[in-house]
Length: 466
Image (cartoon, rainbow, N blue to C red; front, top):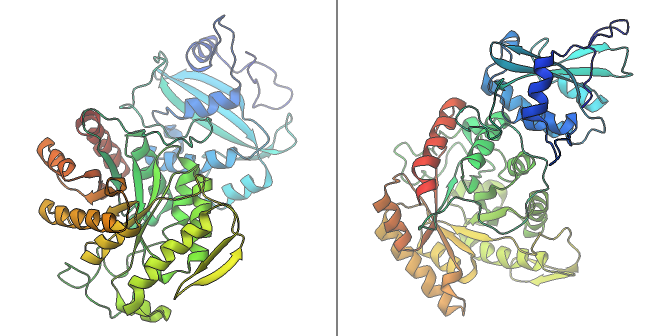
């Protein structure tokens, strides 16, 4: 392996690598074939080493969480650049191997650094070096200790970037399972503090690493100042208050799709009767293609009358509109030209591409009313009531199964999801006994360190044992 050798002007040609650093890099970080020959270039090693960062350089004054969040964004930019990073420098400091890369900057990346609030001197070098025709960005990395094992411990540092493997488009369940077939998701992944893309990205990648199966977003396009009291709220306001930031439910999932590989991307829920099914079908199909078939469309009919009035939509017809929209979207996702004729929507034949990866996106019906249960039975691939009482859940599930039988559907084909707050074996078994196969909970914290600590503990004590 030939290492890059200069950050200095053209006249300074000495190698900047110590022999110890070269040995550590070759032995522990570069991949080798059976004969011991290096088969990995600096670009691939750069991504893999960065995925196991223990701490950023203290010289740059950034916390691990700040560094990690920005590194996610940087890595996505690097995927589209023609130039590979060049390994320029390495050394041992304080028992750790320090690695430095230089990346020739394209115009779009240069604009990204200029407008992304990077601390002065963090990873930017604005001067053109003698050996490069473009400006460069210098990326210092302080990795694990200088004698790392080949298998890194996740308790030292969370992986910060995805591998370079193609997106996994299989239907295989990636969650760790034992005797119980239970999956776990995280809701409210786009609201409040998680409207910040860095924090949402950190939650998503940490959740994926810790075995969380799905991430769920919520929706309210607008909240009238005076509105119907939020169900179960003492002051009538929604969770987090009426002024809480709630970004669009689909766009943040596209962002998450770019920085993850396996976690499923779900809306929980999207208010379907407020949207035209032609637009919704196109947006959802696009997300499904971008994510490699990981989309779950959770839908609901809505509860806030004033929000419908602001949009000019008849609140009292929202149930019928929802039912038609489900059928219309499935027509648009099927192969060939699409047509639909109903009371509220009529179109076609017309072309709508791309189609979802499997020509369908699972539709999970949200809500805890009998009407929602019947809708799930007639049309849903899944049912997600927001109640947590097992007896109430069982009643709703039974109603959905009965409605499925009436519609000539297999009731066992409906996947049941619920919210959860207790992870005792008895509680999980009780939920499984009534048909629940996925439990969704709120984010554990808005603090990145607490998110990591809590989700790692949840993996070890719950996911790995079910």
